[in-house]
Each structure stands twice: as structure tokens, then as C-alpha cells.
Image 1: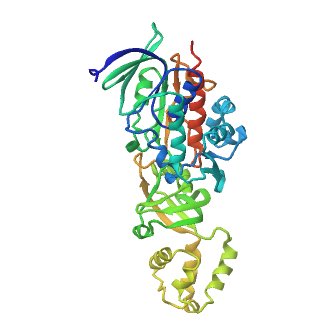
Image 2: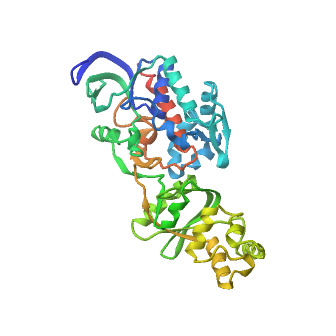
Length: 421
């Protein structure tokens, strides 16, 4: 083993720092175009975060092959990505993975998953491509610093044990989300030292902690369709409908994750409450009629409601309202009927907070977009420096958009990094 920081004599065409989704794609593409490529990864394995994404199933992308439709999902930042996605968008990514044995299936809201329901299928395809293209992979190689010689036009990548030299450097170290997977924001420090502005890095897609103790008893319960509204100061701020998963700390799922940034913004100044309409298919009048029909039954109230909702949820709601679930439906008091009618379409759940970076799916903020040339994913400040994936200040919703950002930016960066003379 070399002494700490000893520099090797080899000059690589491309060094990619970070063996996540964007980094693996960039390395594979650069090597496929003929470059000598070294991939440095701090963990003992590649794709640690990829292997757990989508609950281990890997929401590989979203079924929006039209570039403009896809970019609209990235809101204001989407305009920066046009040239990137026209080179390698959803259709190209799906074709690339299909050629390597990854077939996909579509689920709600256009989410695409491998037919195997396993993130390992996607990871295995990427790792196999790295081997096929003869990318040299060095795991357990945490990078400590990145420097650039203007005179030599070369980068020096320092690790604990060695220093590597390269003509082009791709930084793909991710943001701050899920630091247990290796995303500890290291890349931001190096890029800042090289002159880049790092903008407002924080949690983005984060599970929500609730104050109500009774909700903890619902851990593991999934509600396939709930209308969720966010309230502050007695005003409704946002309403969305989708799937919700209860956990031991509160709630999560794509719907909640996509609302979490707004919740965090309001929570910084005011108390926040989320309300669940458990029967979003009915308006107030229709639900009143429906519940009236349900309560004509001779069944016990708890049993009748548990035919409509999970039993544990029914028990929790009845306990919160101090209504005896053993009461026959037809004997439920008028005031209790009124309570149920109002509560089931607006279950109030005060928010305690968000879980933070250790449970965030992605982080927001990152490198200022005006400092990146999205035709090549290269830095406008440092020649032959490429910035990809979660390093960029692009907010993206849950639903395959974060991984598509990785596939597109990684592909384009690898393509152009390999094109150096």
C-alpha cells in the first residue's frame, strides 16, 4: 500500500468521484466512448443508496417520454435541463436499461419499476456495464480533496492513501440525504473551494413526524387513496390525493414526501396540521348520505367501519372521539354521528416536525445552476470539471424524477468528459 497521499504516475482520462446512480452512468458512458476511467467510491460497495430506493424496488424513472412534459415536473429548474434531456431523456434511459436486461412496468402516476420489483436488478446492470467497459473501480476510497492545476490543466484527486491525476473530473457524490449511504455533502466542500456557489442545501423529500400518540399504533398501515391537506393559521395551504403509509413516527409515502418541503417551510414560522379525508371519492353531501346508510346496520359500529377502513385505524379514531365501538350502528347517538361525519373527512394530525437528512430521500439545494453548462454538464468556472445528479440545485418530486436526473446528467457528463483531447 502506498503512503498517505502518494501520487501515482498514471494520468487518467476521466475520474468519477462517487459510485451512485449518476456516477456509475457517467463512468460507464465515458469508458464506452474510449476513455480510461477510474471510479472512486467511499463505501465498500457501489450503489448503496440505489439499492434501497423505492423501498428496495427502485422507481427507475417516470413514464414521460416527451421531454417538455418531463421537464415541467422539475418546475422552474426544468428550463436548465432541456439540452441535457434532449441528449438523453426518459426514452433513451429506458432503452439503455432494456438493452442490459432491465424491463420495466408502470404503476400509479407513471412510476416505472423493474419487473423484478428489485433495485438489485438495476444495480447489477450498471455494475455489469462498468465491468464490460473495463472501468477501474476503487471502493473504500474516500476522497479528501480535489485540486486543479490551471497550468497543467490537470486535476489531482486526493484520497487517504493515494493521489490520482486526471484530465477530467466528474463529481457525483450526492447531497446530504441519507448520510448512512455515504451522502455526507463532501462534494460541495470541494466545489466551493474551486469557486462554485452552493445554494441553500437542506432536506427535500422527508417523512413527517406527527404529535398524535395514537398514530404510532398504525405503523405499517397503508391507505391507497387519501386526500391530504396542509393547514397553517386556519388556512388551507395545499391539497393533494394519493397513497399514505403510517410509520412508528408518523407518515410517509410519495404523497407525503412531495408535500414535505412546503410543510417544512411553514413549520419554520407557524404550527402545521395535516388533515386526512379518508373518503376522497365523496363530497360532503355524498359522504353524509353514505355514512347514514352505513349506520342503518345492526352491526357493531367498530365492525361496520372496519369493513371500510383498517381495523386499527378505526379503533384509533373511535378512541379519539370517545365513541364506544361496541355500540350497534343504529343506536349511535346523533352527536356522535355528527362527530364521525366531520372527522372521517378531516382527521386532524398536528405535525411535530420532519425526520431530517438521515431519513430524507433527497436533499434540496446544491451547485448554482447558472454555473453549469447543461449541454455538457461541465462547470463554467473550471475546465473539464463535470457536476451531476444530486449535486445540482434542482428540486424534484418523488416518482422517479431524482433517478432520471441522475441517468440524464450522468450520461451527458460521461459522453462529454470522454471527448477531451
